[in-house]
Length: 609
Ligand code: F6R
Figure 1: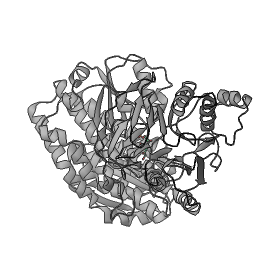
Figure 2: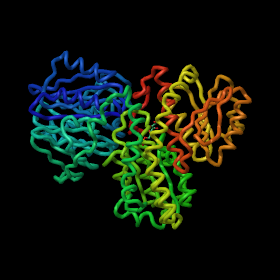
Figure 3: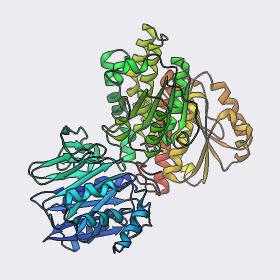
Figure 4: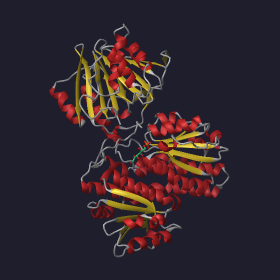
């Protein structure tokens, strides 16, 4: 969702801010703006629409400065208007904000009574006035920000500048990620490292309640009690290349094709060790994982489908009861909590508010054994968890998740095998077989990617349709769900997924020759059942598009189109069968001409409720 960038340097920072905002575009936004301090005054440019429009306006105004802040806004409080776009300004104080201030109404009333006039409907503008109200009583900018944030309830990442203190950039964090980029004779602020990688790879991750005073040559961080604290400088391993398109047309296409590498990187530790062990999840993991009586997975969207897949593995292989809950539902439900349950949160961004709140709720019920599977180091959810397994998909820019999903799956398979071993259900031969299957997986994924030309040909059938049905059974049912979600998200075709056996209990009524039906039909123990379900579709004139395996002895016929992956890969088959449904969604969207990487109404990381 929203993105922040800020810079202080002895060169013009306007290009740095604009480049940073472009790097943040993938998160989803509907307006953008920058404010700079120049000649002891604030100059600001804001536009609804793309960063490029705001950039053109900034160039036209000849904006140049050595201190500035920028923002991409995803509207929550107040519509998509220039007046609501950030930065917000109060009497020479300019600020950008990610998050939501829950007590903004009370603050607004108080500030209006003090004589402040509001130009926007945002919760953010109250912070600008609030800071100013402390400045007029003699505070310096840092102290005014520290005093203002004490009055706020809710979540914020803030970058603040003032015309009265043109050598300082102030940052504050509570509930939303914010980091400082440490350069040579110049420093930066960003909500996401991708915004500043062009300038530095050295980053300090601010912690909850931190504030910071940043000059060209110094960074001073203060903890929640306003005393100076030391925060480590990390070298970011996000590469600039991962933020570039290279030879691809879209980030989604690039990220689909990166999956063999992303999977190999994610399982590198297991393959190198040649064994599954608790240490893969953290130094003290054995203590947390031993003696668990079940697993609870909390996640949203695509991550939830990864959790649904893992449930088949965890119950079938590790023999542990496993429930999977949509985080936004779990957090508001009266649940029966078992302190010996391992709570696993899945979040590629590590920032999803619903998942974070569900984790907090699970912990409040005494479930302290927590593990996060996440793709973004140092993000909020892993920090709030005892154990962490980082997927190494690399930056995922396309809003529709692809490589983050398949790397979550391999991480969850690794967890399953580890739990099975700890439960005494995996002997040496079984372990060696699973390691071998993982080792061969990137190659099999590459083989599935090679099906692209056949899938491209299918996309022409789908592009004119308004509805599609996806069917799967067993561990492949979540993959049908994921296929339907991908198609919905980027092609805007209405798609539903059902367990194939459920068809005759209702959805069969939808099947006509206008309804393409995608079937995930690998050569597993349920294939014969799936074949019967396909007959039910065919008998009603439905056209079938079947993804199966080379060894399934399944042949095309009238109204039945078939694409074969490699021979059945066994337990990791859901990962292989994810690739064709991703490619199908991508190519259908291409034919329909939608904005593949930035589908309408969606944001990459969902930091609001
Ligand atoms: C869909 C997609 C979303 C996310 C969901 C959770 O392609 O990406 O459904 O999976 O918003 O996001 P994370 O995994 O960041 O918690």
